[in-house]
Length: 176
Image (tube, rainbow, N blue to C red; front, side, top):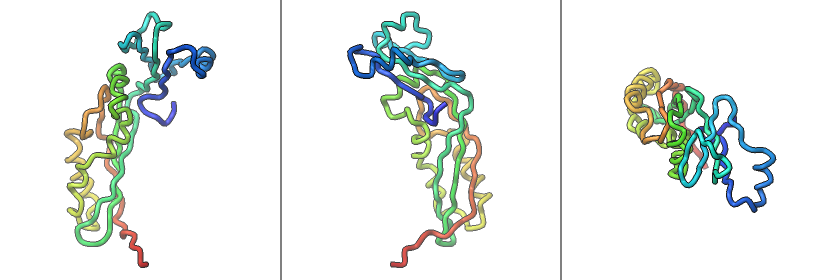
């Protein structure tokens, strides 16, 4: 599978008189293990389409269980000019591929970006001392465990994997 998740590939199939129509006839999308095809027929999306010749679009969706996505932040310490590098691992599973395909136009098609835009870890910015990596890890785990994703990802179940907090490093200061 490719590095994109959960929409691996999307193809518009109509009109047939397009430049790329030859590619669709010669190399149609095929669902690999861990993937499923979602066809759009007459504005409706379905996974078990009987009449795929009428499809106007087809989307390949990754439905593997527990795909790892990462988000990273740099949080300041409370007692020095240093920062912690925080990396959170999430386990994502597409539970409804049709809803995921419908949500691709809303910006939720890139769950890695949505998870990285979470502002809740910034609540702990400047709250922990330079040597308190374990305290920051526990605080982040408690903060993110009840609701790992800060906004709804249509058709995707998000679970918190683990929180990795690196040692505090000094901020880069430009002495110009």
